[in-house]
Image (cartoon, rainbow, N blue to C red; front, side, top):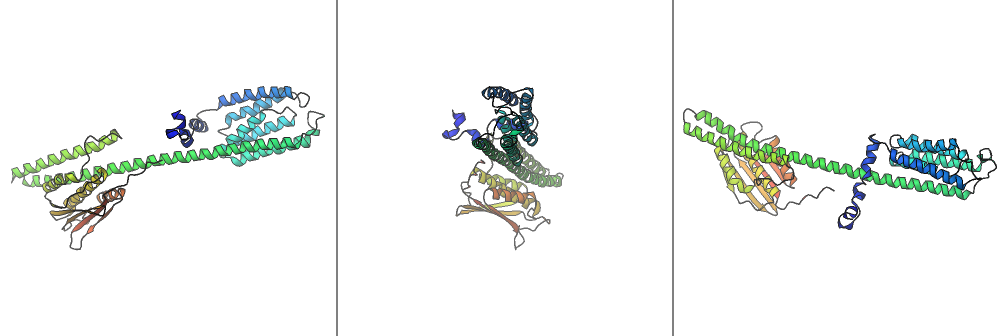
Length: 411
């Protein structure tokens, strides 16, 4: 019962996402399957029903003969191609039915073959062709029943009442209306399915960007420290072996930490959705960041205390500070930086300053680092301002909301 009604007793699950046979329908359209079972059942039903109708209309209509049964089979067998060639099929079934009635054979379930062909054509988007085919059949039936009957079998019959034509027209309208309803609903299912695919692709792109930012921040910072310490070690290898040993120790610690963080990021790829084995870094690890910067020859002064933050905002704030300090190490001639934290009005303000001068045209970073910082801030509804100061230094100013609204699930 729950599977049929869905959660909370609402409409069934398929009403929103499409019935189970929708995928089979699409498979048939792509040529994977043939609707031979439904066509065979329909053919048997039409032949049996026509025999029964002939018995009820003895003396009024012509008796079924091999030609009549051949017309019935032709009208039904065409439905095997109704998914691939809906337009020829709907006109073919209508033509077979018109010949059948023009030959004076009994009224019966041959209408059903035309109805199925019309239904398939409308659902597949060929509305005008379906309307033209059933309109042709109805007009042909009117001409046969009220004018051409004098020259067509059976002999001696008269025109039927016009009310019968109204009944036929009502059935045609009902079939077309039902097919239009199914077509509209199917288009809605297709749109919702496309939206779900697009949402899944968007989530995958966001996850890929997040992982790229994580890897960039981890590797850029650690490799910058390793690069600086490797230069120190090489320069002091002969003159001050003890200081060179210290540099090598720093390289070992930085590379070990980088490997651990990269492994954590890669674990999220291997087991998506699982909880991380280690907590994500946050502003509580600022002392470690300051120590790592000091090992690269950069003195960092921290002012202010970090407020309580959500895990995502805490990670973003840490990575922004980490990337800003990495840029100071790589692109600034200053060996001193200041990190100022302030929070008021529901926002955290991070300001990272260095006194310069720049050591290259891309001082402060102008590539993936700054882009990654802006993406992190924008994902939380915050902003990033980065650029040179009037006194020759460089400043990164980040404003992050303390309370981040959770994104609604894609529906």
